[in-house]
Image 1 (cartoon, rainbow, N blue to C red):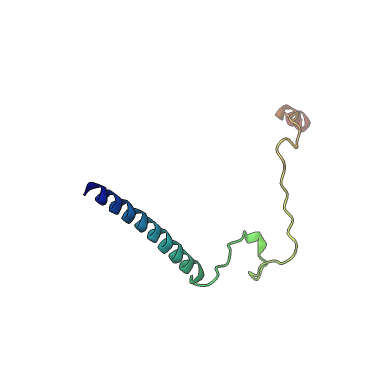
Image 2 (cartoon, helix red, strand yellow):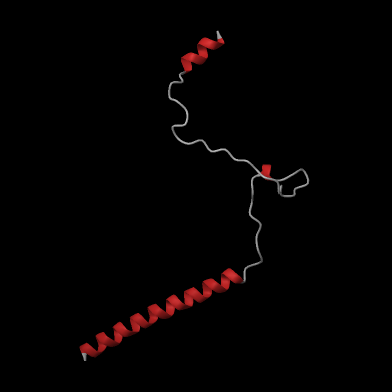
Length: 83
């Protein structure tokens, strides 16, 4: 009787796990497709013109790589130039 209980309990555990995964997957797909419509991505304020419309022109961004500038710069050089 113990063996039957263990097999039945294991079977039910695996069955509930599979049913839970499938139910969760279906619920997620439903929520992803039936949301309140597409939401606009919040861009930075400089991406909008004065009327609040998104600028569709090419926007340039600059990214400096680490180690691009030399480490020879020191504050003493700036202080000497100011005097």
